[in-house]
Length: 464
Image 1 (tube, rainbow, N blue to C red):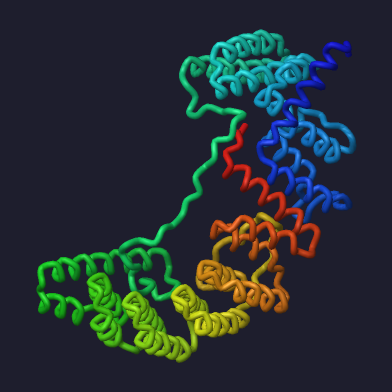
Image 2: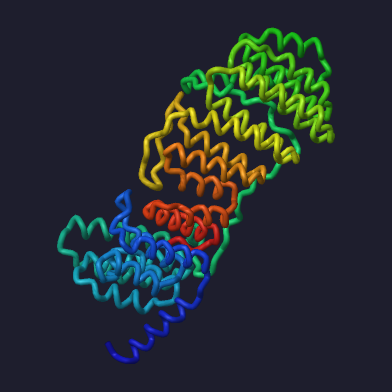
């Protein structure tokens, strides 16, 4: 290579590397690389160095990416096996991409790379440059010997030329375009007092039919309430075909009373829910907890404590619907903690943790592979995930640590789930700290790389 060309490439590499747009991402990836020094492949079969190279290339750390890719391939960072050459284009090392394409030894590879180059230029907002590359790709494709390959690639090129004059769906840029994190703000309208499916698992068709019937009944109830028709409300409630649908009707009226800031009447209404079966008992517990929440808004902690205690006694009286009991207790504990009743909240959380340990351990899957949904079966990780997230939202960090410790002692691999719980609640720093505490190197590497990829996406790195 000529000295001038070498100098140009080296200067370009240094320029791209010193952009340092995503320092936290780079730190996490380098940490994961160090932890995976003696790991050839992760348990899910993926190559951590390839994964690291992809993240680093998207982030613009091109020299780091080349080094990572070289490790993944035993010393060679061949751009044809990764996104490195696309990173060169996006981050200002276009001449390296051009030389890589020129080095292609077959017409089909050269045409394919030129077409990909053209598509990327179009997405970068450079239509004229993209058109020129498409024309070059057409010339290369015409030399392909295999007629089927030649026809398919020419069709792709022609399609690209059709769209190249139109603006792309979104412009790719080397500059970050952060994605605003969705934040679920507390609504001015209180949540519905009970869980409308009663934590019961029905076949999809039956569940949909029940939801339609409940929706129609609630619509009628709210219409009667708006009209001040107490007799109509009573008639609809008493004519409910099942005990649980009657519970929903009563909860609908409680919902109106809570919005009118009448906790005494809401409490009375909740008390009329029939205690016929487990679903109704849990519904009544939720309804009383909702009334307690409104008492807290009135700064009446004594009344709230009475309703919380009544709600917990109802939960403890249920013998089945274990996951439902855990969910209700977690909700009560979160409300108690957020309102300043930290000791009471911690006690309620401990009750939920005790129940969660009674659930079975679910089948284990590789990092990043989600367990397929199962109707009627709840596993320990699902319950602990709910408890952890409630504890995080309530700022009860002692409970978070205690729940994670209790879970780990039960034999589950909990590291990834704790990371996920923090991350879902928008607590990135805590998620990183949790990932770093994972003892298993494979899990720690996977979580660090997963966090790096998530942060990179949130910070608006280009997707190419």
